[in-house]
Amino acid sequence: MYADMVDILIFLYENYMDGENLPPNDAGTLEEELAGAGFDGDQVRKALDWLDELAERSSGPESTERAHRNLRCFHPRELVRLDTRLRGLLLFLEQGGILDPASRELVIDRALAMDKETLGVEDLKWIVLLVLMNRPGKEAAFSVMEELIYDPQPVRVH
Image (cartoon, rainbow, N blue to C red):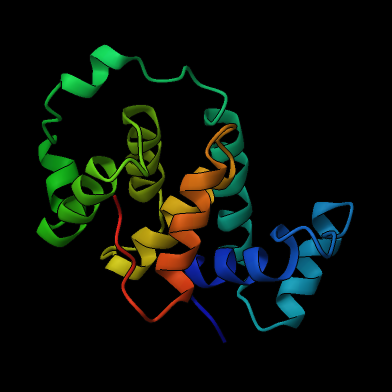
């Protein structure tokens, strides 16, 4: 049995969010299907709530050019949850143009909302992918992020 919200989000992405298959119309049927796939019911509800919150927060304001010159300081709570590797990945993605400041903040928010004490780099990559998928106008960044996840060869970001 899977016990990780990230596993559920990956399952949902790979089975429904690619546009080829549609998820069941109601949450109850989707929860039953995920339980049948071996996911814990409590974790399924948390993952679906996480996605609902992502959709709500994705309609936030776009970043401005002025925001690109600001320095992001992390709160001590963020420093505990986002170790040096994860903050380095966020910086890399932002400097590479994959994340804008508004998307970065949404990624940090969704990472902190994960029901997981320790996040890994792969977990954060999936969070970034899901955030970009929900941000209008971020299709190119989404494609690069998808390559970073699925392609074993390193992608050069220019």
